[in-house]
Length: 168
Image (cartoon, rainbow, N blue to C red):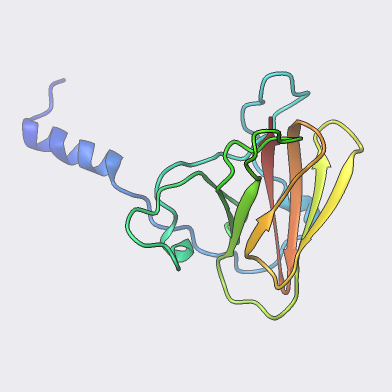
């Protein structure tokens, strides 16, 4: 069936409109319920891993301090409570190119004083690393020792979220 030109234009506009920012979760969840949805596995990984990396504009709640186009590589936590703006894209283990694995952590809502704790586990192993960002979400350098998909549990005062970051 052919659609009239006007109906086709409306359909295309609806498909390309920017989706609204997700609403914050109403209540904290247990760590077991924070696992991100499965996504395609990077080559060589034992199973699905890797949170979606967007290169479009940051969500409106994460744009403070940015001017103009806020498009950059970023990952939003599984609960939508935190965003990792990845300035060192792609993230790499054992960097030799002089760049840094710089990540700006942006919390969706206000939080009390304290630090951001990053508990990272290399997918398919028992390799664990813990990093802290003094003062809570903010600028950081997050170097991890091996390439692969790292499952992160992120905690800061009153909040917890998860994401998976792939290091090459």
